[in-house]
Image 1 (tube, rainbow, N blue to C red):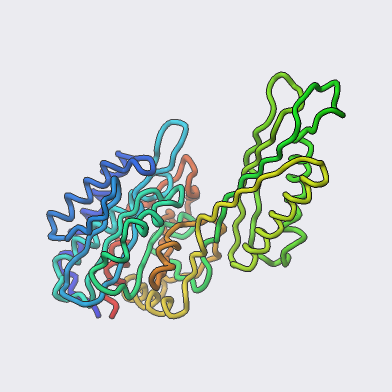
Image 2 (cartoon, helix red, strand yellow; image 1 turned 180 degrees about the vertical axis):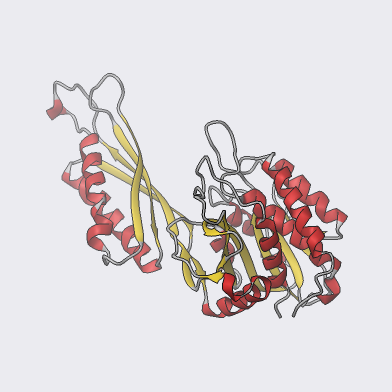
Length: 377
């Protein structure tokens, strides 16, 4: 199904204006008050009905096309936290702005829509927590009909602007954080035999953890296990009471994820036993896989074909980065696009890089793709 272009160009221009506005008002996760109000006012002006979830930040609304079923879109609101405050270094400002632009156009052709269109402007994507919040607030129960599919679009600097990566299968990783605490017996550095120094098992654990991916998984597995913080000791330089270690593990298959989890549990337990100390392990699951199914791929490819043309459709390697879009994807059929945002023939810094930027004409392709996806029967 296709609609007459009508005033689509006007809404693409407005999307660019929204993006510049949002870019100048970056906000931390759970503090997206300006962005939320901008979206809320936009929806009121365009007869888009709010779905009240009782959120402090974030907004969900829908275009009522008088249908029994609906199609949903997710955009994220928050900026990247830096030492100097929040900065839009991941393109969430453009994601929000282009969904607003597409929604504005779709609201003018609602009689042509095959489904009601749900607009999910999610808070707190950066800590990968906002999607779960929406579900706990009753998102699925308050949907205006059965959700036949969910789409998300994320910019991709490594892909030239104007092209879209339509990938079948796992695209982004399943992820968990972990915290390990080794508890010993503090004392005097001159009497080590009367102490249990937790730094020793902590160091041994960190060394052993590096073998989880290199020795316990198939060498072709796409997975990563990392230790990123260690906290222990004081400037008194005596054996401390405990050592705390934090990190993450990620994989592009649930089997590899589970294997890493099992090995992590065994390694912590055996290390503590070997060094006669106590241990505590906390594993915090954060996101499942972003996994584009074959059935959704067919619809997504058709939408991209109609919006951008076959020559602008590419495939891409997946990444071990994560996105909690996948949490919503467990509740409804879902597909995640990567839309090129890089300047052709120029170096385009990656997500979260201080020099990150998005090509000026990105809104044109994003709005067209979103509109095309909404019109798929």
